[in-house]
Amino acid sequence: MNDRRKPLLIVEDDPALQTQMKWAFDAYDVSVAADCDSALAQLRRLEPAVVTMDLGLPPDPATAREGFRTLQEILSLAPQTKVIVLTGQNDRANALKAIAMGAYDFYSKPFEPEVLALTIERAFRLHELQEENRRLQHTLKDAPLGGIITRDPQVLRVCRTVEKIAPSNVTVMVLGESGTGKELVARAVHDVSPRVGKRFVAINCAAIPEALLESELFGHEKGSFTGAIKQTLGKIETANKGTLFLDEIGDLPLPLQAKLLRFLQGRSIERIGGREEIPVDVRVVCATHQDLKTLIKDGRFREDLYYRLAEIVVNIPPLRERVGDATLLAHAFVHRFGAELKRGAMMLLPDALAAIERHPWPGNVRELENVIKRAVVMAEAKTITADDLDLGAAMTPDEGSEPLNLRAVRDAAEYRALLRAMARANGNLTRAAELLGISRPTLYDLMNRFGLKSIAAASTTESS
Image (cartoon, rainbow, N blue to C red; front, side, top):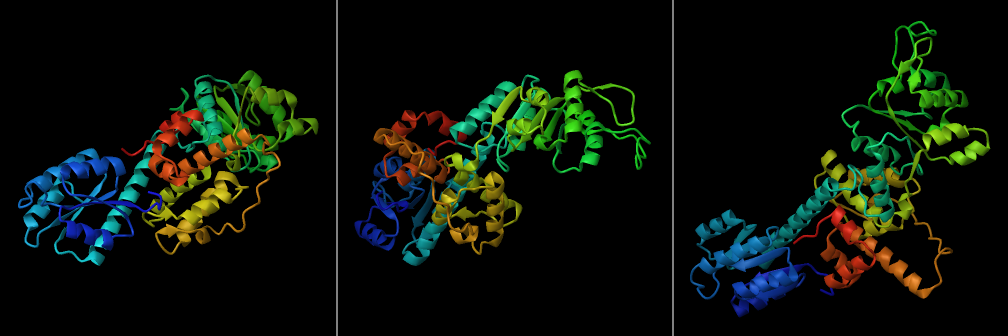
């Protein structure tokens, strides 16, 4: 399929009608079969999404018996295939029987090419939407960790690390640029830990004024300060038996750093205005986009607190370093926002996918999410173009760090192209091979060579 047109299989035993249909539907990559055996052989070879089929097939073209057998075989081999049956003018009973068996639609002979073409195109579109939905649902269900959608080896290693550390009670520090999904990883630590049935309490240390932050963390007693009209539990105490997530820990004021250190050492707190030590059993996960070691050198972060918090450090790579993940996430966001905003099933056009791949995403996944949400709202049609994304000019990539060894350059280029194709095809390996201009066996060889077979299996399943 060098021209990359959609494959359409026509099952018809009349040579004249075969020629007419091939000419009428030349926008597709048309293949023809004259009987059941050749139709099934073509089905296995081409895996067409849509099949048109005459019910009157040899060796008994006067009845629909062979046509029904062929239809049953096609749907058994490829249940997602859309079969449009062609019947005689007064053969409504057989047409309805075919629909009951699982055919997508029927059309009476003689057909009008323009009208049948619309039915065929609708069938292709429905097949694409169903496949996209199936892949997205499978990706979400079988994602390495709940809510994390990726095929990038770096992020998959993060997921494996989270799975290993979650059962223990070690304190975890999540590092990464703004918008990379640090809270998502923190929640994953909680969700796969024995504390999953308890509370996950999050507090952003940069979002609360310093004067209020101590009360937010440790709570206060009634009358401990002006306005303290009742006893209030802090976030630490609220998270008892569960997980406390301290976001932007680098912004925690130094006096509170000392108090937090005392809590981590003794696992007990005192509310503001209180005298009683209250034991708290809580798992602590923190996150920051700042370089804490630089803050330590500058005297703005306590070194002893750092080592208490950084028993395990998890680094999340920025989106620009996660090959293929931008398009993979874009597909998922389009699906999600299309449903949430009642825009129905929408899809990204090739120029939009290319723009997403070129963009450096300084705001990471959060920026991508906002861009896709805006595009879903603003798009005039059910398709999203590069203009709808409104990303502007792409940044020129820095090639200064590229290796000079030709073998290394070739391997790196093949690896990146393979990940990009798998992401752009949204997990469909047939489509990925088509985008790369190679056969499926060659694609499998490349995946084995670069160790991507297990990644593909973990994130999506190929259509049979």
